[in-house]
Image 1 (cartoon, protein in one colour):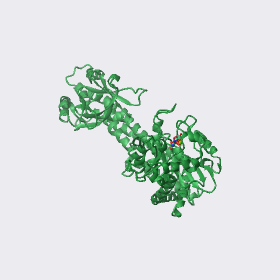
Image 2: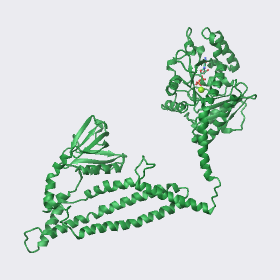
Image 3: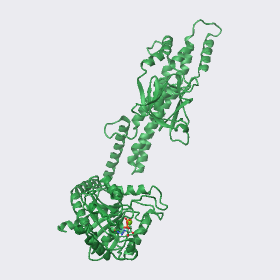
Amino acid sequence: MGNRGMEDMIPLVNKLQDAFSSIGQACNLDLPQIAVVGGQSAGKSSVLENFVGRDFLPRGSGIVTRRPLVLQLISSTAEWAEFLHCKGKKFTDFDEVRQEIEGETDRVTGANKGISPVPINLRVYSPNVLNLTLIDLPGITKVPVGDQPVDIEQQIRDMIMQFITRESCLILAVTPANTDLANSDALKLAKDVDPQGLRTIGVITKLDLMDEGTDARDVLENKLLPLRRGYIGVVNRSQKDIDGKKDIKAALDAERKFFLSHPSYRHMAEKMGTPRLQRCLNQELTNHIRDTLPAFRSKLQSQLLALDKEAEEYRGYRPDDPSRKTKQLLQMVQQFSVDFEKRIEGSGDQVDTVELSGGAKINRIFHERFPFELVKMECDEKEMRREISYAIKNIHGIRTGLFTPDMAFEAIVKKQVIKLKEPCVKCVDMVIQELINTVRQCSNKLDCFPMLREETERIVTSHIRDRESRAKDQVLLLIDIQLSYINTNHEDFIGFANAQQRTSQSNKSQSSAGNQVIRKGWLTINNISIMKGGAKEYWFVLTAESLSWFKDDEEKEKKYMLPLDNLKVRDVEKSFMSSKHIFCIFNTESRNVYKDNRTLELACDTQDDVDSWKSSLLRAGVYPEKTITVSAFFFFFF
Ligand code: GDP
Ligand code: MG
């Protein structure tokens, strides 16, 4: 190491690493780090153990590394290890280190061999090591091993991705020489996140296991799949060496001999081997930290500033100071009222794009739900004819009349107008409910002060309730006013001639606006039989004349077009199996409405959607079941 100041870089980042680990994920800063990735049995653990010169990592078949291991190597005269999760406990026996890793892995993943992204932090002090921090990750598995769930491969890939997608992460891609390099799991994964090979370092293991007469010279000379930081070849202990307890020092000597004597690698022996890899990583990481530090520093600084600002509010905060309390109280109440107004009146800043505000929902009640309720008012045709005839007869009494008496008209019309009361009152109810929901949403911010929240809600809600009864009185009064005097001279009064004209013209006037689009949107056709693929989503276009649906919203492939003549709408009870809200369209003459279906069942995600589709259909003249139109009503009468 040339530059002395630089040597402190890695320990500095180690400290940050520990600090971040102890506060959990909350602090989302990317620390410069090296992640070790590779297929199962590629030799990752062997490389790390060679760095330390000790056997301390769990071994065995199947997925052994099941949590990320953040391994901090620290150059020191004494040799010992320590875990962040039991700080202060010195490990000098490396068999115990292995047991602790195994125990700690199981503690989080359970003994069922699952995996977990929660890292284990291990620090090793040793005269053998150079300062270096590496993250040992689970090996990329191809086939589910033993009783592993099949999706474990994906889980492992996701976990590795979490680390290596960060720009600040160097990727140590470990690939065994006795497999096809082009198919290397590690290099493939690295290429996904670092396509230009800028932050990937290649490690080729098992050079000693290559077939006679083949070598990895092209790769190691960085000619085959070039990486900016190149490749380093290593030879670790074989399984036989490990079983025979060959110590690592002997293994490192053997490795050195291997490179010096191998005809293909002799010329670059100085650039190969574990010690060289360790030096190189130490240098790369130091440089990397140096490069990323300025950006890291400014990020940290701005986060510090933000936290400082937040802390400032609490500095000198005396919770018992009465003037402070009053001020805080007033501020919160004022905020509540501002929020409420924004949600009802609408506002330009901070628009919610996730759900409708209270104001927008009330708008829908006025312009979609309420008109729908009006049309839905039931009117039994036969019953009305009977009433009309009785009214006329009773007015004539013993006399036989010549003209239809106005009094009969008034009596019947009044009966109909009175029916408006119910939907009007219902409309008030719906609006009130929405206002109360809005109060609740706005008082969420007062959650830290449950009593204040409760009291605020109580006062505002009781005020709304008070206004509710006044509003209802007012609405009923308006209807009573209409009832008390029926002005047949009013320009809105359609009368017989107009009524007749409207009924006969209604079809014509519709066709002039026939191609005018009333509404578009996605709906699910619910009653396609399982044989034909079951429920399916289509893009629907409603005009005044027809309802068409398409494969998608580009409207290129039309699936069907349904003329609206003689169609009506009916609700369909929600099945407990489905989360969807359904309504259906049917033909009043009991004909099939769509292919061989009596009804066309349409499903939406919310009741709001259903209501608003129904109200659009209403505009297109598709009425809910059992209603008559105003003009039809006049028709009966005269
Ligand atoms: P990991 O799953 O990537 O951590 O792989 P390990 O380090 O546990 O190694 C898997 C197996 O390959 C072990 O039996 C090692 O002894 C063996 N192995 C690793 N590297 C080499 C090598 O360079 N040469 C030889 N002959 N065997 C190796
Ligand atoms: Mg391993």
